[in-house]
Length: 66
Image (cartoon, rainbow, N blue to C red; front, top):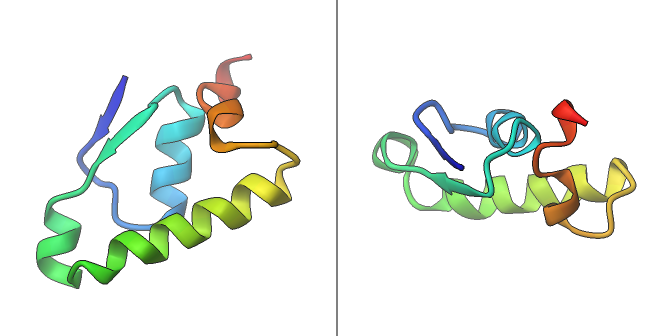
């Protein structure tokens, strides 16, 4: 599943991933916030992955539905 639309922060990306998205598309957030938004989201996802006790982001995919 691909998370498209509304991905503008670590929280919205995390919500998409834990809802089942294994790929995310960012467009509007890059246009309005610049390309640095990508590294900010990635850093935040690494932090959330570690805080949640997952060994990798792949373990979080679809976690809300388990």
